[in-house]
Length: 203
Image (cartoon, rainbow, N blue to C red; front, side, top):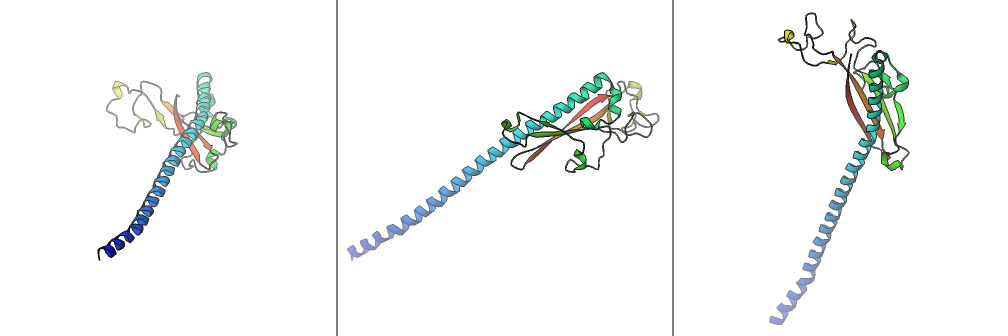
């Protein structure tokens, strides 16, 4: 009886070992997939970061355009210069995802984008003046997004939002117009990055 019982116990070892091996195999597959997911996530983050840095070339180029115009002749900023991607107006109904938003975009090659290994390293940028109409931002009938410095002491107590009204706040410094520079780049993997920068220029 003792010998038969020992034989039955020895026969149980094989199924138990097989179960343990299956569990170990499943755990190994899970760990492998988890490791691959982490690697892919890190690679995607690095890829997006590279695209974002490449798109910044458009922002810097647009900023240099505004800087040059503002230092030489600000009147030039009152009219559109579509060949340089500059629009003296801004249509708030157009989104960066719409084709019309990029109708007059300037395209520049970024030699540093993606190490220059992709044909999709072209950066596009557009510049919009945050005004309803071209021309003088202070003209009657024109509405622009303006920011200014300190209020004069005599105008303290004036309610917010009344700067365009008669008897509104008087500013110590000239108002500044908002200019929106938008740049984008399409990556070789189908992704794209859109960066924006707001520049303030005195009227």
